[in-house]
Image (cartoon, rainbow, N blue to C red):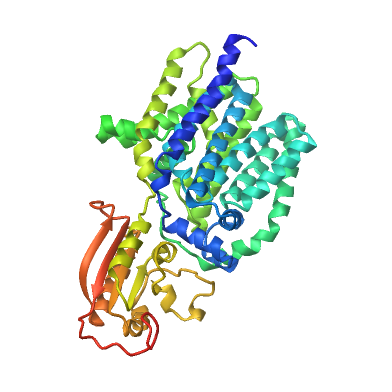
Length: 519
């Protein structure tokens, strides 16, 4: 083997090892956040009716249930997510190498291995890293089937697309975009275009059994309004740039520009991302032998984003920047193509600068998504005392104590104080508490001497109002706030906050009555 080829082969494991090191930093001292705790409780209980209270399909909770039954600790769950993200990066490498050569593949691999969003997604006990891995290899197989369709590749694409649909609902947009692309690219007279359409039809057939769950989840309408994007053109232009940067592993650009010139950061980062994407598309179209397959990839990326945005604005579906991680493999290849013109070492240096910017963004990525519910639960158990109750407001705050605490009585407000008929789904969270819920909460406090009010997502709309109503009800029941603690200290709004309330020692408690239950 020529020395140069041998050296190139060493780059792949070297970049993967760097990515793995970045992924595992801080995993040992990270506890589950509220979203992760809900998934873990669901997996541990085995009550899959609770899936109706989630916004994701059932595959990841089922995998997590197997890990829990096998005795794998929490750090093992996160390590598996890290491996899945590196699998997404490896898929981008093979896709880039196939479309535009070794250099593009290596740059795409480096971008995703060091991406701040990748460091976040790869550390979460959620379905995002698995979805990103499936998405990368689906896009790779889309290109392979389009160019050289075989039964084995079509079967692999069908199975991965179906697994994607059972992992993350954004795969429905990806499947639809691939199907539309297969129709539009039939003019290229490639037999692979028809094969892609057949594979997507087969994947949809495999997904039909899961549509019932999707229907019930849509009926629950959980979380609608938590994050609503503006349809204003300037906001959308900025959002799409953020999607492309985060999905393609170039999300270090914005904080790097912000550190140099905060006043121009937003506009400059947006322009830089669009310029890189446009140059990458141009290079894939003009300077590679596989231009039709590359343009199909670009069309699938654009179609998926357009369909997801349409679903959000027309149907109110969930949306977040990291949901588009399913496109990471494809977007990274397009951006990498902009950094890899032939015989232009300065362009490779520019790619290295983006990787360095990603590395400087790593500390912020390691902090993002952290909610120290384990420390908060220990603090509650050390101070609550006998005849105490833990109250959680908004989202799944109280679930954090149910996972890490010592099992004291706990109530999620409003869901646990409403009658079963008020929530059609088991453990469904209908929203923030209202005045009517306080009338149901008040009698449950009759036999309590202390209450710990556990708050998360305090910056979200409506949470402050729900917390204020619960605090007012506690005062009405004779409680007074005696301690207030946040984690981490000094953050505003605090990811996790606990307010401890107590009644006077002279308060009479009924003999034999339990705190947190209607006497």
